[in-house]
Length: 390
Image (cartoon, rainbow, N blue to C red):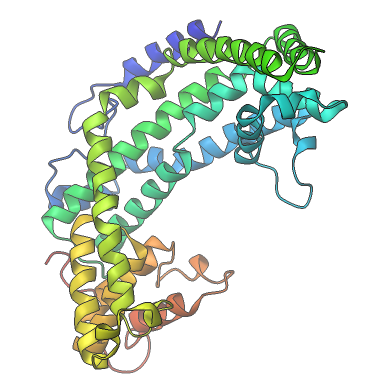
């Protein structure tokens, strides 16, 4: 049944794939990995063709609805009774219960009472386990999409400045994140129907019976290991039919590229924060750095932030470090584009009061917003956004 549902979704997806123009890794329309900055910003600014941007904007809410539906099914099956009632329930919390059960199945399933039976049912619910696999990078993809689109819109409508390399980097990451979100959407749709309740109950009863048997501990652990290995093999076979796994296999180079961006940029960003005299971790800097003057530390922080952003132009901490240090060293004309980029990745637009009216701005956000707005709405200052390219 699951394989048939996935096949039907595949046909509907292929009908929309290979459209004219640039395509994302899943074959759907995208920005393209080699798009010129002018083309990327023209797509963002376009008022005639909003199809791509509308679809990208709708993806998070569509995933949110599907995840909420999956969580409701967990509630119906009683799984949420295992969670801390003081915390907001989530699929991630249910997943942690699964991890805990699988890490020590004998302890999880052997005790008397309903909690042990629920843990056994979670371990036996293959659709739940599959949902967890296909959404393993959900938060990352949502963050990538949100930040990338916000920065592109900031470049099209605000003060954000982008180089050609940055535009290609961001466009590629939009396409990659959107592809995985669409794959997850398709898989979650196929998994919406309930699992085989009788099979879940049978497997769960088998697990609890093995855990509570009168044999010695080693015998019971071996029996549980065999049963769980069988469940895992069925889960892996089911996963082979998912859009998410197939996309992951076809995007290994792109995923490796994105992982390297993070691995290489984060140490530079962290070092920049150590150099920045106003950061929360400034006092942890090496002694030779702490002995430097404020100006020297600002210059060191600025250089390292620039190096980090050359790899990951969406890192909020690196953008903030560059904005703050540039403002100190060069003034507002140079720092405003970086402050505006920082606001963008935080979901704030200086010209749209709705994006910050109902939120409590932290110190960084307040400084960035004040800096971007300084001189624009009252008093002397820069009246119009600068050129969109640098």
